Length: 258
Image (cartoon, rainbow, N blue to C red; front, side):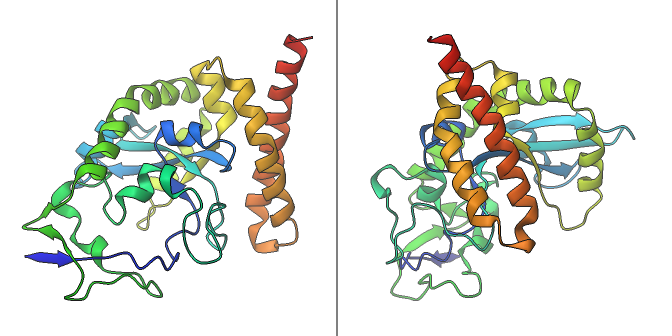
């Protein structure tokens, strides 16, 4: 079994929510509106073990156990392009683009043998899967695996931090258990979104005020861009609320230096 694939730089995959490693998210805090995306997998599902390794395992109120992946992400509406996407479809930060973009179309949140369907372009995408494209997947193995392995290592390295965040936030936001139960009951899955400020508080980062300064104009910009879109009302509310939180953190830095 061989699969061929080549990126044609159509830019079609550069829209909407972008999962990031923690390192990539914080390094690009001046570019992306950041949040935490929670997704869960039932015990017994094929992805349960890997999801628990990369994230955490949580017991719901009904005693059902789920594996929960908590992913730093660029929180962008599906209809919006990545802020770094150029008019010609190329990446504006190609030399420093996130590992999620480097690993595409492969996905290290899945086991290596479960990647074949990701090499089928989505409707409207112009990926080249013809006989002229290079072989990228052979006998259920990734041929050039450097970027995939690096992203997987980064995810495993950040897992303890994400687990500590989950433990902390469950104490102060117990309603998340109910949200996770609702998510677990959905056959189509989905995400729960929590703010970057909750993560900064839980992990007690010493650079949280500086990160807030970088995030504030991003949230303000996205709040303005979504203001006149009724179908993006939830995004707009979140951007406004998170801008307020970042402004508060940024002002604390100013207060501490005066």
